[in-house]
Structure formats: structure tokens, C-alpha cells
Length: 393
Image (cartoon, rainbow, N blue to C red; front, side, top):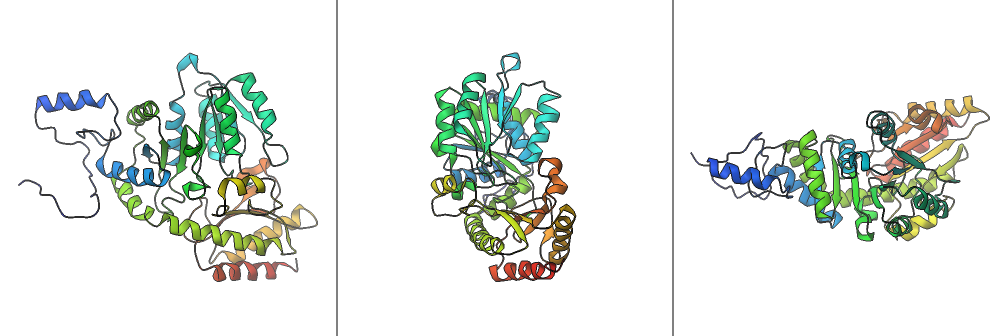
């Protein structure tokens, strides 16, 4: 019995491991064309190469980013690995330059895999007083001539906003490529590819999916040769997203802009509330004028918002009191604000910074909030009641 086309408005889930190729001539043609590594093949061969359900989900992300191609992987880390593979050329590979204020998992990957296992020449560029000095940055670029520069639009967890436009201008001046992890900003706030970025990465697990129930990553770009290189690497190492997760992602991504704009709005309101509380020592949020990169954020994001992440630190006479206040807060809000090691979920979740980042951010009272899209009054009430209960400590 032959399969009939169904009048469905959605791409179905194609769970095939391999696809029917009918005869030897068709098979030879399919495998010959596969070496071209096109974004969408004429004939699908094997789901580790390409899968129609996954390709359909990639096209939804292409619409959001306004890019020529997007490649989904099974996690944000596999997206990073795939993107970096484009710039690895054996012994001819020049140094790779990473900003230090990036996701801790990326740093661990750099140290454990790129340096220790692959022996790559990795260099770091560090901010000065919470902001990147671009004059020093240009001196470094000029001196080491890296293969690429890797940055995050909004850093984790101190929320440093990189001056992306000027960073791109500098790297292009010296013929260097640039990879940007845009997970915290999302294309709702900023589209680095429009400014000339070479590759943009997202942990799709976070805001694109937005429900904390699937793991995925994506690499986006406009250069066809980079796409082909990334497709080839993803195929050989098996970094392909499952069709079931791709199908679910397609349904979740439809509400991305509604969800994220609400999260940004909630975060802005909550920041003002936290900033006025006497037991909060400091709040880090790009929307605050006190944040070192506030002016950069205003220029980059316009009036759309400043993201949905907040980092704050409890006050106290010593580290012991700060830690006690942190722990009491986590306990008091735990019914509605869970301690979960991710971000971008529908409801606000938190992470204790010292417990995760250790000596890099040793202040024990620091908490990173991933603000959800619940009713703001409910969110402020939960946090406000907890802060009032902590004050006597």
C-alpha cells in the first residue's frame, strides 16, 4: 500500500533511520549529491545526514534569524563543537581567541577538549572592570592574528553586553572570523548576522524551546562553504537532533517572541524591585544605568528590552551572613522558584553562583535568576515575601 499525502499543516515526524532509494541508479545519484552537503537534499539517505522533520524545524529558526541556513544539533555544546570544527585546519590552524566571560560549559570544553585533547592554541581576552576594552582588544587581534574570535552577546552570569558592532568591525579589519553565542539575547533583541558575524550559535534548549523539556542547539550563518563544512562534521560525529525533538521544537518556537518579550518585561520590572531592597547588595542587569555595559546595551537592543536574566548579591556583614541569606532565600522561594541548572523556562528558576562557578565568582550571596513569563504580580509576591522574611538575620 502506497503512502498518500495527508492534508496536514505541519511537517510530520519522520522517524526513519534510512530512506528508500528504490534502485541502484537512484542510490548512486543520492550518494553523489550527498558529497555536495546541501542544506536540504533532493533525496534523503540517512537521518544522521539529514532528516526532513529536522530540516523543517531549521527553517523556522532561519525565519527568526533572517539567515540563509541553520543546522540543528542535539545540544548547545554540540552546536559549539560543530561551529568550531569549521575553523580547524590541522597544523595550519591559527590561534583561537575566546572572551573569558562565556558559559562555564564552554570554558570546560576549551580546557578539557580543545587544549588538553586536541592541542589547539587557545587564547583568552578578559574584561576590565566589567567591560571589554576594545583598544586592548585590537592590540591582541593585531598581535596574534587569530583564526576567529568567540564571544557572547550577553555574558553568563554577570550579563556583560559585548560591543558587538565594534568588535565585528575590528575583527574584519584584520581578516579574522567571529562566532557569537547569542543565547541570552536571542534574535528578538539582536541579530549579529545582520552586522557581519560569521556564525551565530544558540542553545535551543533555552529560549527557542523555552519549556525546559528538550535539549538542542543550532548554528546559523549565511556563508555556503561554512554550512557545507558544518554539515559534513555534524554528519560524521553524529551531532544530529532527533526528529521527535525537532517536531516538538517546531510547535514551541511558534510562541518564542511572545514568551521572550514577556520574560524581558518581567525581568526589567523585577530588577527595579530588587535594586531598592535594603538586603540586596548589588544587582547586575544591563537595563540598569549602574551596569558597566548599560549604554552598549541601549545602542544594541534599542527599546526591546535587556534580556531575561538577573544576577544579584545579598548584603551581609561577612561571607557567612551572605551565604545564610542566600540559602534562606532559596528555601523560602523553593515552592514556586526552583533551583534548576538551566535557564529560559516558563517559570522563574535560580542558580547559586558560587556553588556553580566557584572561585571565578566567589561571593557567596550571589544568585542568578532566569525570569519566566508567569504573572509579574505572582513573581514579585514570591520574592518580596522571601526578602521580608530574611531581613532579621
